[in-house]
Length: 273
Image (cartoon, rainbow, N blue to C red; front, top):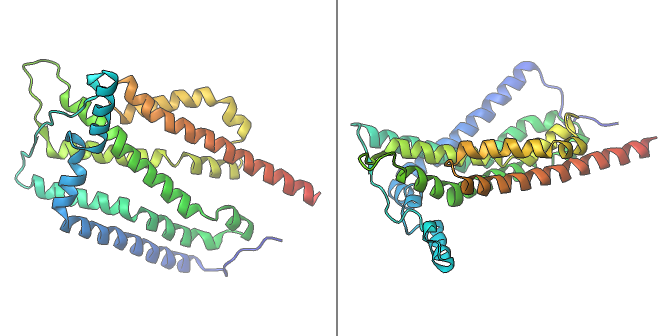
């Protein structure tokens, strides 16, 4: 008979344990944020602002490929716009905000680890086995999403939004805070969207979805994925397809995961019968 792996704790004991997990999580974010704050020149020049420059890896690769096939439109961000600051404390405030965002991204695996340490002991042994490796997979998918956004979505979005004009009489002067908000929102959104297989895993475990359900509504999911892609990318088909493709691939991975869970549960049910 399955048993829980921890001793019974009172409600106040759970609150105390949760408090310490939250404290350690917050401290990890603060530590990484302080490190990012100290290395501001490297962070801003080589990471944050880099996607809008022609020297950025993605921009150079696309331009080389575009030149090879004769499509010069693929040479993006060849004339980078200048970022401006219009508030007295704008650059300092932006510095703090960027440091906190990088602290959150860098500490994300540890945050998931602390969450698992709090939730894990309350699970049954069988549930522990199913969820083994959850910290690794959740962290890996989040980091993959952030990297995909950084190297694919953000350069395209920066090029489109930074160069778009309604009239030749209107000049784009991009505010620093606006640029940072756009870049950080895309990176965090992509990181969360890449957690789709994990979401499908847990929904299957609690019985809300099945492989048949996921296959039946595959076309509907494609519409939803395209809608999400349109939200976090510039409004052009090329960018939306670039984002939709990996999300649909993750959806298919989720179907395989759901199928494995159902198959294993059916085998265990036959063994008990």
